[in-house]
Image (cartoon, rainbow, N blue to C red; front, side, top):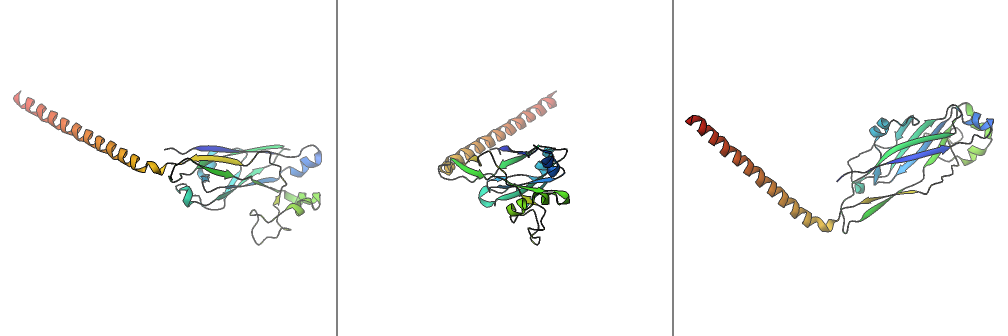
Length: 220
């Protein structure tokens, strides 16, 4: 049995047709909010060691237990941060994601894990987004990038009206067939017994050979 890892790739294209757009987004922070279903997870340590150069920080909204079965886990929300510098028009972020083990069930087959579209947020210093009038303030909704006690008017993180060009992702994870439980158990017991007998016979032969060698040494 092995765990399968896949890479979630994000490519963000920012408007850069004019000088105003370049000035507006320069030195801003991009925030991606991605929710993973209970059957999937990302490891904070692995994300950090993966060294995606455009991913400057990752925040997990809850502790990640990588050992849980899918049936015992809850959806996981992670926030990915990147910095827009030097009139960057494209940002590329990739994060390794794992499938959790699923308990065996009758007939086995596969379980479908749906990965919803991420949400995109923007934070710009010096209140630059105010230059857009009420555009961002009208689109902004209550979000987890700002503390609960901060109002939307004061919150500097604004949700972007992003256009996602890909369909929501699906990950089909194979599940063991519980109908094979007794067959697998019987086979496992037979293999263990055969292995134990082989080890005992090997040890017994070794001891017999050792005794023979001792007797030959005494005779000589």
